[in-house]
Structure formats: structure tokens, C-alpha cells
Amino acid sequence: MALPRLHRAAFTPDEIEFIAGNELISIVPLYKMPALKMIQATYGPFRPPLPTKVPLWLALSMKQNQKCKLIPPTWLTIEHLKERLEQEETKDEFCSLPFNYMEISHMLLESASDDIPNAEQVRKLLKDLRETRQSKARVGLEALDDRWLGMHNLSFMEINEIRPFFSRAFDEMRKLDFKADT
Image (tube, rainbow, N blue to C red; front, side):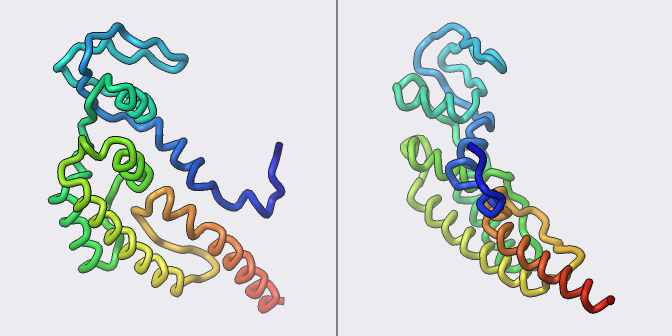
């Protein structure tokens, strides 16, 4: 069923999380298993202790069934997140983070926090990083003009959050500019 145009302005967080589930992540299988042949690709064979890359959704399913341990992404460490938080607080532009960092970190912390060293501190740093970036995005929206909005390195979820506001504001500003020209 198609949604009315008004309700299609943004994805739901669950839809964004579903899309992020296709990101590849490294795992260490706990059991020897043959390759899994899926429609889009074949993953495996799985031979402990050799790491292999699989989509996040498959890694979480295998983790739930106690068939693997997840290897957290390099950006999901205390050191890396502290560095990014410091950059966010000291620089005007957004620091570079993976496009789906919010969704991936949420799924990993929700389902595999035992595989993430210092998970509670990582969770706190992600929260601080998110709040800092939201504050910076609000400042960026204050400088809105009717032709262009430059905010580089935003994540999918961050873009999704400001899209409905920006789209309506941009349309209204264009209408006002058109009326001023006539």
C-alpha cells in the first residue's frame, strides 16, 4: 500500500535500520559450517577461528543462535569515539563517521554488547556524539537559504531527521522568493 505524499517525507527508524542491516561486518564463527548460499551472495564457508565478513543481519542472527562472536567495527571503540567527539566539539564541520553509524551501533549494542569492549562507555560516547551533532545541525539550519544547505558527513538517520523540516522550509522560501521576483 502506498503512503500519501505527506507521509513519505522520511523513512522510519526501523526502515533505516533494515537498510543498514546489509552492511558487512566481521565475525569469528564458533563452529565449522558450510557456505550459506543466499539470493544475492554466498557467505562462508565458516571455519573457526578465521574471521569472515557477512551482512549485519546475518551476523546478528548467528550471534543470537550462538554460532559466532562479532568483531566490532574499528570506529566503535572508545578511543575512536573520543577522538570524533573532540573533533565535533572543536570544529565547525561534521566529522567523518560511517553513513549508518547510528543504526549499526544501535543494533550491535542491543544484540551483541558482550562482544563490544566497554559497551556502556561506548554507549555514553555515542549519546554525547549524537547530541553534539544534533546541536550542530540545528545551528546549520539557522543559516538556511533557498538555494543550498551545506552539511557534509551527516549520517542517514541525521539526514532523515532534518529532511521533513528542511523540505517544507525550502519550499516556503522558494515561494517567498518567487513572489518577491514578480
